[in-house]
Length: 171
Image 1 (spheres, helix red, strand yellow):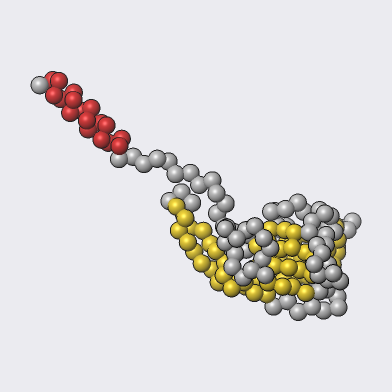
Image 2: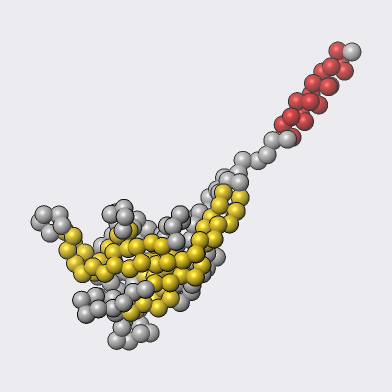
C-alpha cells in the first residue's frame, strides 16, 4: 500500500509540472518605426545628409532616442509613432545647437504624420503590436522651411516592412 501511495504521489507531482508552460520571453521589437530617407531636392535620386539633425516629438519635448542626436552624417532615420493616437507631430531641426542660454537654435520645421492604427496580437509575452496604415502628411512648404517637399513612399508601416524608407524628405 505504501508503494502505491508513493507511485501515485509521483504521478500526480509529474502531471502538475506537465501542465506548466514554457516561459515566453519577448525579445522582438514591439512596434514598427517610421523610416525616413533624406534626399537632395536639386537631384532627387541622391541621398543628402542633414547636418546637426534633431527630431523632437511634440508634446513631450524630448529628442527622439532612436538615433544619435545632432549627428551630422545621417541621411536616414527611424522614428517612433504614437501607438494610442492617430497622428504624431515632430519638430525636425536642421543644424540644431544650443545657444549660451540653452535655447534651441537651427532651422525648425514641424511635421505631422497621420495614420490608421491596426493592433495585432503577437504572442502572450509580447502582447499586441501596432501597425500603421494609410500614412499621410499635410506638409505645405514655405520659403522659410528647410524641407522643400515630402513624398510618402509606403503608406503601410509594419515590422516586416521596416527595411526600406516609408517617407522621402527632399531638402
